[in-house]
Amino acid sequence: MTETMIRLQVEPLTREAFASFGDVIEASDAAHHFTINGGNTERYHDLAKIEPGSDGRSIVSIFRGQPRALPFTVEMVERHPLGSQAFVPLSGSPYLVVVAPAANTPGVEDLRVFLARGDQGVNYARGVWHHPLLALDGVSDFLVIDRAGEGPNCDEIRLDEAGVIEF
Ligand SMILES: NC(=O)N[C@@H](O)C(=O)O
Ligand code: NI
Picture 1 (cartoon, rainbow, N blue to C red):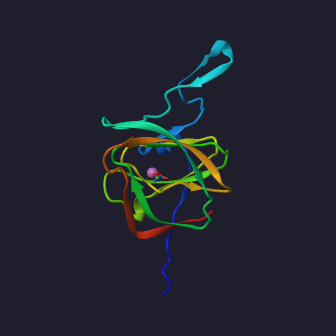
Picture 2: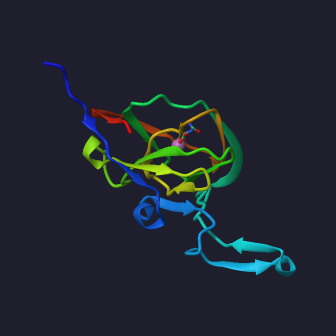
Picture 3: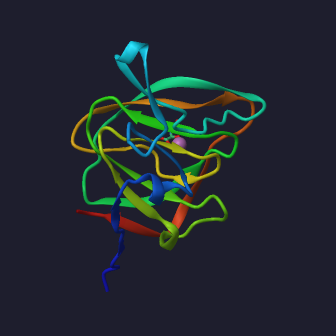
């Protein structure tokens, strides 16, 4: 009998739906925003809780991701127990965000899959399980804000049962 994998539902990324996993970084009217620079600029203020931990420091990098082919099989997730990790798209393409609660060892039933627009970033809160970068459509650059410091900061687990993402 062929093994039928669980098909994962894909949700649109919203602040509300993502709130228990971290922050959505976007210039939305729901954010605290105000005009600066003599009216030339709108500041969307304090959008994400960046956590480098007490013994770490925040660093800024660029990840250049190759597009993932669909259908995509989610077989593993990782987490950063010592700090948060933010991804802000620079290339304007959509991408996928796969997360699971920080609480315990996740199973496929704990996964949430979000489709992020090319003008939405995400910040994974410290310890939140997530799949490594899932760029779509084309080679995509992301500004990444995460932690540098001592100690192991990347736990990976292989899921007992895989899930598949297909649109
Ligand atoms: N390993 C690494 O820096 N990248 C992952 O953490 C990721 O979430 O893409
Ligand atoms: Ni990560």
